[in-house]
Length: 114
Length: 271
Image (cartoon, rainbow over the protein chains, first blue to last red):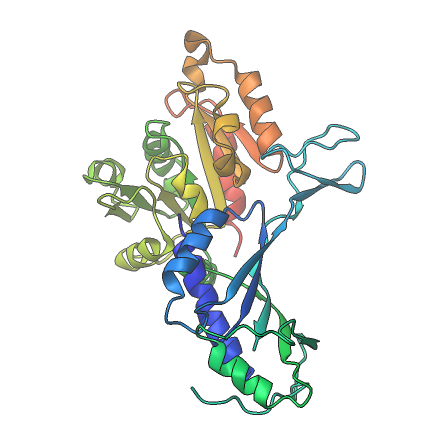
């Protein structure tokens, strides 16, 4: 629901990076998004199509790296993949975990300037 | 379009990012270039002795915050600076947020100065219900917006006198979906689940419960009449939100209210 705002923030940050690197265009944008970040990738791509024409990212390739959710089990002292929705159940001892170790990422990982 | 300046291979100071030059796959292509980058690519070809274009790939690792997150962080700093604890109360409509706050202001609110920001789509009914001479209250009417956001909280917080206030209650719009995505800058997120709802609400609306620090199981005085299984509800909350404290209470009979006040007391003392 707030993907347009996120993409707007991304373009602002990219504009700043382009200035820092003496570039006027960006040719590839790699975003890193965790499965728990609450971001819908379809909606984000839609926002990208809507916001980039005429900007420094016009025509740039948008790549999205998905970071799978991982949680930590305090009794087993081990991380485990939490791919099944919002219930983080340790595969070893079946305890429920509230400690999220990965999956909330939302950021720009890499940029390519021509 | 201007041709780009010669590309630096390494920047002067690059403490937090890495640059590695790659060779592009465009070598030997006979296709005409078009599009917004064509002029730059052509210029780069012209400047390149061996016909290969160096693409600068920069690892930047920039976290993205949208506007609400930035305003929420600002609110959090403001609340911390004033030495008050803000609680964001979220639930379905009718779960008992206002009734809980009425009693809390009448009892706990007489020992510790509290204030309330209350959100609804329309009417100031809840603001009126909560008005007490000893507690500042501001009503936020959102019109068609289904949640409170950090900007509304910043403006509403400025509208009341927060001097001496230790606990700021934010009663969110009754909605179990959208408020989950909007950080208001609160220190504590409280999710209410009433016994008039199903025991499986946490399983059906997991994001909001996942984000809770405290879950209040409300209206427990009528649980038996309704056939509401408290142990099943608690088990479901634990599956989604093992990090959350759970308090079972009834604002009507007073059951569990002491535990709720102890929770508030522990936070009202923090500076």
